[in-house]
Length: 498
Image (cartoon, rainbow, N blue to C red):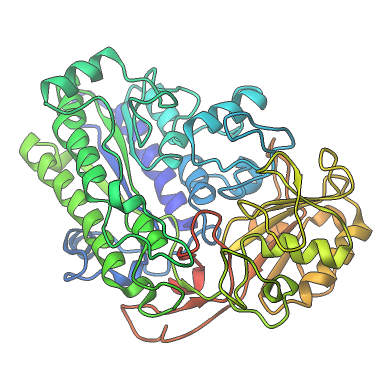
């Protein structure tokens, strides 16, 4: 990911330099294609022929890796700005904001893959929570046409403060109450192309399943076909007609969406993310890329357009057993026996620290002994409005905030975490000092000038290998994460793509 960020920034610099060069020079266009959650080594001429061709005929960064394990918004913020998370403040998909976000359901731990939530956080933090220039904002300032099309959340990040005034934004919410408005020009162009003004829903692909019901067995074909049509039949022809250079971001929800919701492995790790649903998601993203390339050829833009393909993170299959967790020894209505429940980390810490646990996604209701937080997040302390500790649940790693920056509480928390078999790396805020068995956050680029609250501890969940040496199909397993969106979900870990 770091190499991708450097290359992406270098590409933009090249574009702007070309734009200012001699009049007879032809400025380059750029398409950034992001297949969300794609494992690089799974791309072959058989699994993803369009991506394989670009890689094999172009430049291939063979040792690339995600900037931060698992999370789309974290890595997306880096791709959009070229900055580490310590500067962007997008520490994960769910973060602690220090205030209650209304569009997120009146919670201090909003899930930020949402246009309305991003707008709310922007407003709270002086109009720009990212606090960094993004590549699309810089590109349009240099006279480029700009567009971002694809998955809800990261798509908007690339020009989130513009809110569709100049940059075209098409995502899951387009045409809805919380979507970024379409310009009159785009409305007219979509109508002329016989495309609806409202994004096609995900349909069966959105079925996440639970501990008793398998998730989807369908890739996100219909929705992404709409987005690919918008890009190929409307946006690219519009950009050509303007006779200006352009930057287009196409963020494919697949294979990530199909891997998260896959119904191929109910409560098992086989076939996991190597099942037919995940493979269909990979091919779906590949088909979208092929359509964009065909449109470039037909419009005569291929020779003047650079295409960059960069996944935001990898993926691995998960397991939900633990021999040490107190939460795994409790019976829950929606959790198989001996499995970790949603919010296991918050439950285990509440018990270890002897602190009351409240659910920030349920009006700060107290969490009973035989229950778990609704979305996995937790606020710990006697007063939920002034918590001693906050757990932002995400999946492959969780964030722990200690608003008072109490070193003694941090020490007790770290010792409790080190007793759990699901914990691997622990990264601690440099300001709290050194703790045995941990590393400083600065080593991950998590310290910087972010305006959102910094976490005090990042908990990385344990992983192990199960056939990772067999290429191109990686079968690494993430030890025990908990997905905030689906019991049948998969989670990512960088070991799966190294």
